Image (tube, rainbow over all chains, first blue to last red; front, side, top):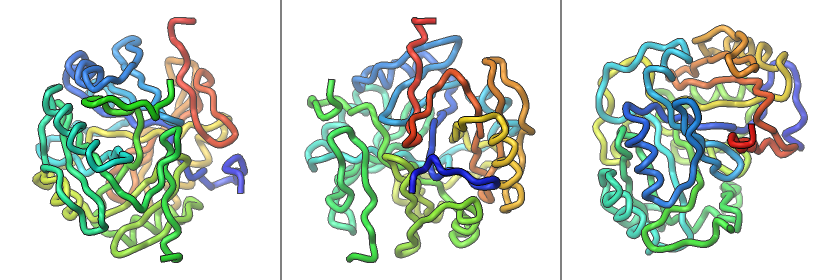
Length: 154
Length: 154
């Protein structure tokens, strides 16, 4: 079924953008640039093309205001994690190290996972969590898109 | 440049998965199902294929523990917003209404935006923010992927 098909009251099963609220836009932009990313800064907003979606950096108070929500008073985990799957186990260690060198924090040292993979976590300068994972069960296409397996086959 | 190219210390510019921490997996799964989404529940985790990435629902305490982070003590905005761009202004109203009917909360009533679009926000039962946006400046392909414009052209 094409995702083009749309019916009243339905929402196509896709994400267009992920916006991370940040407290210091330049610091956040520089962090991702140090990881090798290329983005555009326009009027206080940074846009990265990440495959078929966009990753956006925007001041967290502006984002909260735009969303009609109260800025969070809490600290610690934000309740959302991004994952970046890699094609080889060694890339997990390399990227976690690079993220630390770029100003991130290693939240979880890479280790074997229960599903037969290998993964670690870092947080960016604003505390956003990224899992770097080698998961042999999730195929990664040349363009970087991933395919979730049909678990009923296993 | 193919994103396949990878160098030590670099991270390809892509996202594989977005994992939303939830307090009640069934409630969260049912919310997205009411919006028309199809997912797989496997061992306490729900997987949705959303274009070339995956959206995952997992218990927030397990997710925090997996990430090596303290569960958040705060309330309000989580500092991350997902956006779902649509092809026609009318879809913004329809989806926001559908989300409310499905058990979500309207955080921001749809309205015209400064960039010439039209957008509103809802939060899912766990407070995760979704912007539903009609943005004529961001093209949407038939497969749902979006392309961020080259802002230097404008």
